[in-house]
Image (cartoon, rainbow, N blue to C red; front, side):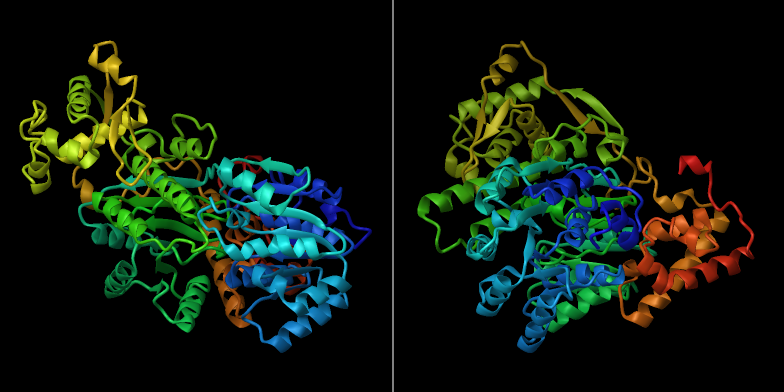
Length: 632
């Protein structure tokens, strides 16, 4: 191994001829003994950043990972690539753990995945004292931050473990989503020493984003899934009840679907997860309990049946689509009821028993702010991708060309007079109420709460009738985004005016509202992003003959996966099969030039795929793609 360099390792084990953005800089820093923090979007190749140096460093690399499924996936993939790796977690018996540690101490494994809880056990500490640990990698590093969306107290065991080691290894940490606060927390809590920090950006250019407001969500989902019958997808629901109901509805339509939530037994969850990963049931309906650590690369869509509680959660869950870099769709089905559900869930959220009262209040304030930001995302008429990137501290373009808001038609309406009425109402109410009450006053609603507040005598009462409350709320949300209004950061969420609102009242500023043009049968229409996909899927470059070969190679991959009881994407990713169709290799030398075909994978599967290609082509090179080769 010591005679190899980083490029040799990349080609031999992983089948790539070059590094992606950011990978080489992180690898070089690790090899130079420097701590690193890599914040890279899902699908950007974070694992390569620690797996390549792990094979070049003299000792063992420990990878702390939060979920058993993630460890299993990573270890399977490494073993398929010819890298000896193991995992240590509660799915193994004590004798299996002892054997794995004994083999690791004897030099059998270069990479060991471990659950954070395991680090504090006497046996593992004894193991760590007698071996050389060159690097400790923290995967899903946002879990260490109390301000991250997946804080796990068990991750604090990592720091305690590092302090107990005789020789401090290089520490590398990786995550896909981290706000500035979470990034600072990771560096501080893990005690990273002068780390090289790389943020390659949060943009996932292959993902199409859309917010839809169908009248009948079930009908929308049925039409969408049937329209993408050959594809794998995840549908997230806010509650277990929604998961159960929607799963049964889809099964009633003859769709191969499974489900996942905390109310199922451990065995049921494990079986259903495997059915999804192995493509026996390509559609998964689940709560947010599912997905972290699922490395399934061919998920072509993620639908949110309900709005999540935060953009952190949404982007992480939506990001499970298109991990292979191919185009995929992320669609959120929004209704006003989603806000009510999420506020109920926040009100009943179990707090950490160790939190002081001030900390609980701060967490609640943070959760409220996140929920508002998520709601504004659902309401905005501007670029959805730009909204997400701005939330994570990045600058995006105003028109990405690959989200629903950038491809649908809008009309601009001057709503200055409506905005003045809204501002006047808030001031008349002495800025004491939230959005629902203000919208109700303006629309002239007669509900009991408004009678109790005595607002019928207001000059602004019914001043915007016959506008509907939802229309008034849309303009209010737009005014918040435009910083004319703001909402207090507490559970009361009071609506208040900013200093800029005076400009509207004084006639010095107009307010323009972008309204989507109505489409016929909009409620049940499935957009699916077909009008504006900014990036085509790799297989779209194949002509009819190429697609036929691609399907034959997929069938072969499925057959091998069943023989070896492995997920199909572990054998070869779709992009590898497409590259085979483009290059049509006839021998080992040509096959090793295919993206994702390393030496070990060639040894295991190469000849079978070469045989399939030779049989289909008759041994004659033929062009199976559109355009020139240099364009691909």
